[in-house]
Length: 284
Image (cartoon, rainbow, N blue to C red; front, side, top):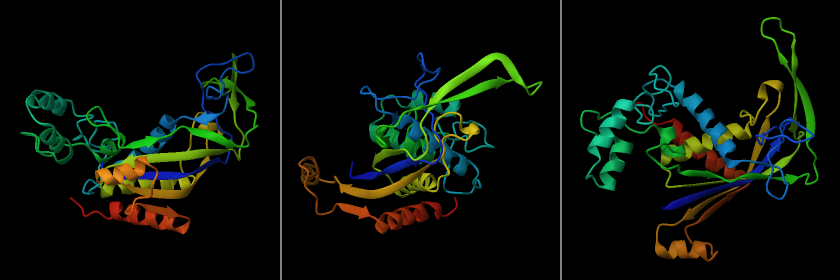
């Protein structure tokens, strides 16, 4: 690990939000997920999932000559690349047969640069490198986003009915309800990433920019108008961990001489530069 990136800000709901806990109680069929102390929160896995999906949808629509590739977790060559080992069963079998006795550096080179015998063009796509796959750990960690304000907010109980697709009318005995938070709730948002190359950093920033633009929805019942939210990034830190002394400074809470903190307008400039660098890669 040479550089750690720390993104911090707030996520504000523009509409109601429902993140189901998977259980109900005597008040509602589907409670909003809570911390052990009762505070509402958005799981980091939910944030990571919607961000990955947004990036996959964008990259899958790119021209095949683009330098940016995703498997979109689909083996079809018509939707992303089918050359990623996450979806390429033939490659998986060959990799498992060939990796015995090979060192980690050679295996990593196969994953990121290709070069496996008789499969030189097969390698991890950019979203799998960034967000992880069965063959590679994720380089990005999303913290659970805990509700900050209003701290005393109560969940709203919203009601719905099942619709008969043939008649278009409500079906009998399929009334349900769920708990949702109202608009203007603010959650603390923290993402950390490490060992990102130029493309990985740019794709992460592109996904976060989509959240800043309000283009990514969260949670359930989004077809009912829920889940719209807006991210406001306040700081981005580049933390140097390229030497024992740099790591020691970080562990002791001292600002390293090569650490960089971006705030206010500098956050936008940093994001713009990273996105531009990734999306202007020459065609392959």
